[in-house]
Image (tube, rainbow, N blue to C red; front, top):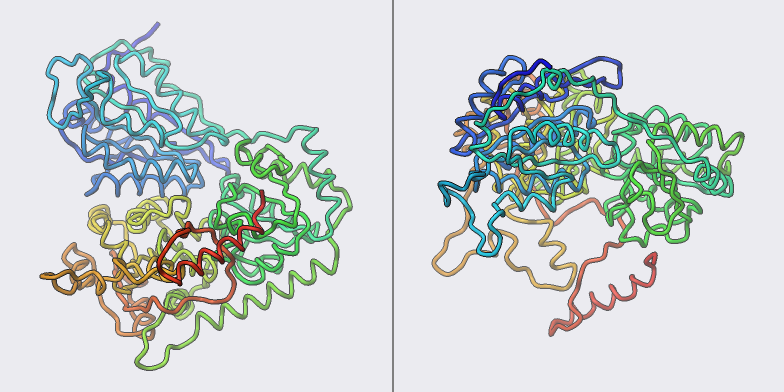
Length: 623
């Protein structure tokens, strides 16, 4: 048997460089798009040398923060609809634990990413080494064990030959449509440098072909019977529609059977915004048409969604309907005692189409959906083209409209070129309702974990995956302050972004939730947080962004924003546009109840009243 004597780190990089995947269009591409790395004493010597040797086949990218670069890797895979990945390498200790939040983002959102943190010495000869976390009860524990609950697969490579089983197993997890998610291979720094005679065949892996599991015959019959009994069915499109590349199948299914479609955050862009049967966003931040039909539906057909509380109105939105869930993951398909149809979304829709025969939804229901969808399109236009009164600050809808329509002014087609990136605060609600996406993936929202600080780093990953599109990160001032260093990374890598910073001087979204649940304004808006001896916060976001090399401007109003967007589109390097906004106005159309824990005991009458409303609303929850 032919062998190659390599260090474990060299074997790891050589294997990753050799991996290929067959894309949905039939093309063969590298499975791993590269490695983000911040070097330290746990990965610079062995893994760093190995990456340098393979740099032509497996590029290495430098970032400025471990959490940020891991977010970028997550976004890269999400933008590739889970068909390609990136790896992330850190030193031991804080470099590794900085990635834990990003691992949780990937875990919740079912996104593949390969985490490769350095680890302490397997021999333990020099223990405790710099940055080592010592456990008084368990000698084999290191800081990297914190990855166990937020990864789909975790392994610690304590001998170089273990890579022969651990690495293919990690790839298998990331390419499994049901179990897809982050994996972590902890790499002790001495073992990275140990050599082994690896079989040459190990570095000739087969091309990855992603599986599409079909339905079970019994489940298919049950699902078809349930749908055939419906007069007022409703499809809830989730992220699984996108990851299965089932957008065309979803469109054909909806049209053939006359079923209206609503979108979760994960599923938005699966169906073009102006399709006559697309009612738009559903749930807590959903539009009025989508939520009205959800309340009146007799069967809700959930396709590729994990039924998060924002989608279901904390399970009080469509309690009158029977639930059918088509999902590749049985855990999700079986939620809330619904009828499960476990399969790939595209294959499942195809098989269900054949099983339904000539059945259609009630014609009056289909026509109602089309009328309400058309009305909502007009309402969105009105909301996003409204001009604020002189002397008043704009709110998010007006900013979104200006950004969107700046493409029309530049001669483009709104929604076909831009990718909107967001994650936290008020913006996800407004973008979910109001952003117009005409192509799959043009709405990139991290709303599974809703991680503040994802937006800019995530935009870097999206731009790496989709260099031909304009990538626009919508970020609030609070989230910008949490993580902004990957602005510099975008310039370092030559990945142009447009970052729109909406400054409402604090955590405006949470302040509204705080007062809505009866509490006093406290510790959210910056002006409410000045302690004795402190001073009011004065942050010039444009100056800050410019200090990292971006072209940045603070615009005075929506009209200036639109002009600045035109210039930003014409630019070739990262642009940051800052605009002052108000947190007191939001889009009132739509929405539904959301369960938030409100104290049973409080001296405040407002809290007492809010708790009474909570108790009444819980009577409508699905149990």
